[in-house]
Length: 327
Image 1 (cartoon, helix red, strand yellow):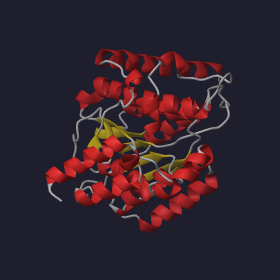
Image 2 (cartoon, rainbow, N blue to C red):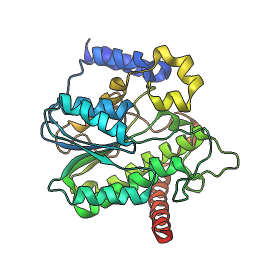
Image 3 (cartoon, rainbow, N blue to C red):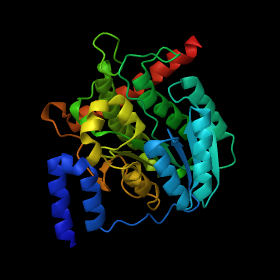
């Protein structure tokens, strides 16, 4: 397919939403644009949270086959062992596993220390751990679980690895987001929902929206060092998390949902680009940078995005300090 026609197909799919987010979009784009595996994963060291199933495991398997050294992070010991065995069976590099409940700041701080004490630098940090809950729950540290998993602990781990120099000078941080974020306007005051009027899907979407602005914040603060920060929307993917968190959606859309491997494609592609490429701070879907907005009343101006991103980082700093102060 010519570049002109593939561009037209991409635009038509993107406008349709359903065509873009389902396996239809992935298949048509992959064929029309002649997607190939990235060329620069050999020897890169990759840390993936939420790596025991779904998109995280699919990404780990693919990057291992392409020569990356893969570090799997998960909270269930048996699932983590199973994932390590699967990845090691196909790996062209070395494979490591790290037990960590990524909803807990104390666990995440211990993970950061463990990675810091190793004799390597991380080339790619993938924030993929997720939680889509039906009921309001607090972590053992007193933080609403969704925001703790999707925002607070990714911030803690990223900042810790940057401060210690464990993230390579040309390293990149890739955060797995969701199309659900399109429904929510960024609002720092509403980041952590309470039990009153709690909606798991809203809590999830708010955290995912905040991730996009946090990635821009990191780009402003650290982008000049040569590091890159990216957010990926994988489309609608058939994963255990979707089955558990959105059972009706999973049942209705089941035949059109992407496979975990299709959902992981852009993540893997970004992880394997040349140093310094592509430009940091963008929001990606199917190997293309996309707009942060689809709904008019969720839109922020560029100045508002900066202000909100800074406020999200400040909120994370204060929340983390409070967690550790409470012990």
